[in-house]
Image (cartoon, rainbow, N blue to C red; front, side, top):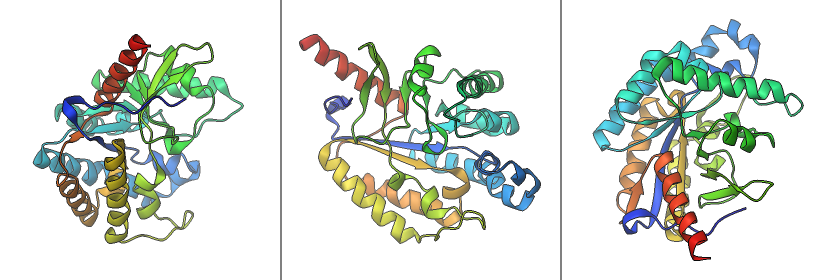
Length: 280
């Protein structure tokens, strides 16, 4: 159930989230366990950790912008130095499962175990208790919202049903987590990631930039949330980093844009939600 549009802090016209799904090798292992025996294929994910994350952190530092990194527990265990670098740079880390697997609709115990294992890894490696969650590959079950409530997460970024954040309503009528909607059109993977078993055209920077600019212009006009999803193994390629820098500079040409982390956007949405309830 969607709430009314948010009022952004300090009179901002719209909010922009720069988010990075640091899947690393799990992007490939979760699609096919046999990919563990295909090291060249897996090396695309390794690139995300080895090259992508450091370069992205450099870009964010250069631009003086905050970001939210959604990190699977497997990635935290395998690349702890990169997770710690993200934390030390002051960015938010969100929950992204453990193995980046898509939940089985008929196996609730496995879904919860995967969820908990991811939380435990983030805590064990970096002392992180994330406030937000994003489902792997846009796949959820109807058990997701109760899991978020059970384990105390404040927001989700898995649904694609709005351009404004909103507060979920639980079956008993109580408030659930805040939703920060996203869209495949604002995700770099459909445009850039390729393998022989997952063939799709690789798009030019100009093509991607034209879509992101057009989406941003209209979301800005509406006063909504622009939730950009990137993956270090994709956006971390040299020319794609240049694309991201160009897009950031384009957005900065608009007045009153608020660059924020997921938890900051969720807090603003909650404040607006509670104010409206108090007025009712």
